[in-house]
Image 1 (cartoon, rainbow, N blue to C red):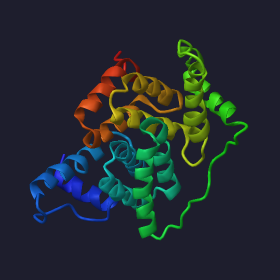
Image 2 (cartoon, rainbow, N blue to C red):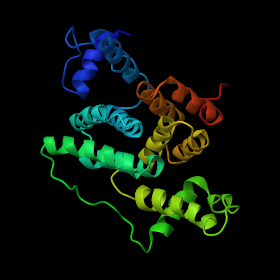
Image 3 (cartoon, rainbow, N blue to C red):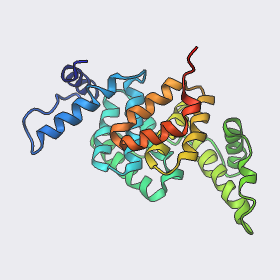
Length: 254
């Protein structure tokens, strides 16, 4: 593998620029970074530039690395990802990382949109009403994960026994997962990545790996997404995600 050649080709594809030469304060570090990500990681696995950039935007949103999020929002646009697709990748992080961090990412994303002359707000794509969000959310949730969440927190006192699972169903699935633009397959794959990047969520990573496979992703696509996320979230979180879902992702040898 010629990392230098690959890096130059991929950076032109994704950013429309050449790799760093000798300029800047830390060219040696940038050589390692760019050759590792764009000369090596980007050439392993089946993901195309569109999915790789959506994965990157998701991880950067979770990690709150906002300068890099702006750069990769622009890269998304450069490789043909639509503004609405970028928005959905950022929006759906909210139930997992919280609304304040998501608002930080939205602000960074919108700054790039404004610089590119993209009119805001983008067109609305929500598909549920207050009256049917719980029903629609439960349908999506049950199809991928079953209905056991309703009983898992019965041990909580008072209103919390119902409020906790209802919030997950209504917000994560009813408000966000029912939105248009991204397919169920893509949403589930990005959810695996964001949970891996979050850290400390091995149980949820494993559950959503199962959901991603049910939604139509292959084992290779899930592993590829996690591997692509690695240089942005770190090796330990890749290993944690792979280890907790090994039995779901392992390709059985004859």
